[in-house]
Length: 451
Image (cartoon, rainbow, N blue to C red):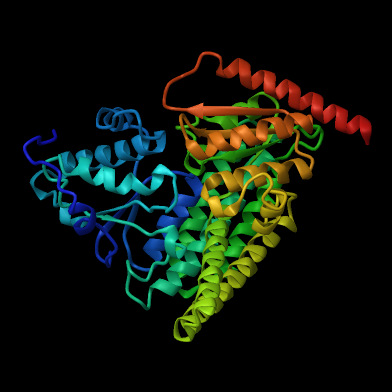
């Protein structure tokens, strides 16, 4: 139980929410995208950091108990996950439980989104529990495009950064295999069952050869998974309406939090493509390059040539990394696309172009609204039959997204629906989704008639 005697002190935001070498500690990762977070944990283990994906959603009552309800839903879910995990560990280990053995991994973002304050707020709550005050929180940040050299030895950081990026893209492709195959599978459940085997094989391969950056081995495992999964498709089933998901990254990827939205849409007759984790990583890198170019211009106008040279070096280094990531992402997708017609990922430049030269929104504002608005219009451009905006109740960026997208897509006659979540069950959710899917089917039929 929490101890109420100690008043929170805000210096804890610096002393116990920080970036430090996590070597030798058990790294606790909140669950989010089921494939992505498990491959991320495998990437940490490949370089010698014992990483564990915590059970999710079982501690939701704890998360709600120690929040006011004004926080967005992912904050309550992740808080519940860490409290539940640490309480279970304390009960399992008894006197042998040592908070020094654990590190809670909770990244952050700059900008107006409340996500940037999760780790600070959760620090205050962990401090109220006997035994949890000494569990530090480590983070990486969008401010420097998730740089990792401050949380691990310098010789490990470049390896981890490359490996974790490729692992994230592989996870995106695994998701897209599921979404392409499962709606058309010959026997219910065969796709999910097999993909768990494929996930285990990929994890084992990352742990075995990831530190050597032997990506060809990972690509071969991925190709084996794709070639097997494509055999599950019933060729006599007609193609369903394609539904594009946009919105807040945690909610749209966390099945428990969004009440299995993707499966529900599939049950009602759709084929889903969710905006990828890789899209967000690429957006963060894209934004970092924009900021570095802006800083370079400022130094040029100021005539500060020493700072100008330093900014140029950072920009060139970052642009090289972006090219490397684009090259690796292309390799991963080509490994799958030669065997199965999964959806390709959105280019960030294409997403930005959809904002119509800032008439609809501006990347300078930031947040996921930029990706959601541009991404939804990319789906529309590629002939999708419906758009779903997934977000926590009261989420500011997604509310902005809704205000802009709803009239735009209505004008284009593309079905659109908002799905907000706060952990409660809305009695009209099923009816709204079924109505939306009926409209999406009509859109598909009208498109076929025109062609």
